[in-house]
Amino acid sequence: MEISKAKVLLAEDEPDLMEIFSLKLKTSGFNLLTAGNGQTVLDLVKKEKPTLVLLDLVMPDMDGYAVLAELKKDKNLKGKTLVYVWSNLTQKSEIDKAHKLGADGYLIKSSFTPSKLAEKVTEILTSIKK
Image (cartoon, rainbow, N blue to C red; front, side, top):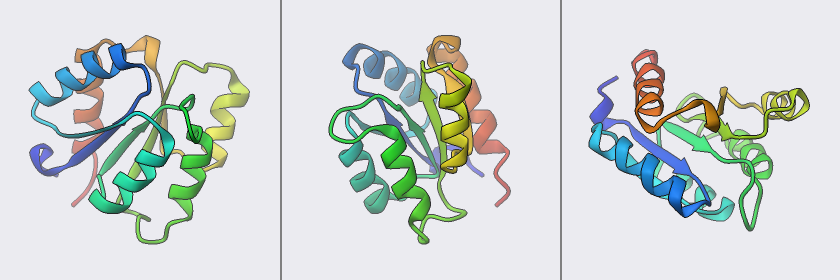
């Protein structure tokens, strides 16, 4: 998959984190969308159909678990949109819950610098067979 054509949605409610990570993703050439709450994530996914969603779990309006459940129920997105949880919740129960709801992966925010996240997104997108 050509990375510049893939839409990536970063869901993050902390403005400082949103700014530093979205800046790096944009300058790395990704077609980036951003959302600061769960309802906006759902609206953008339905409208824009991103290839990858990086989904925070702790967000206002609707938490990431509820968003994940809604996204995975949508038959129009099946096989078209990957959802990776993007969180600092590190307990096994949290990770297991996300996987049971259908998360395609789980990324611990504190393990990623902006550059490392851009590398990981590149890795995810290049692994998609199209």
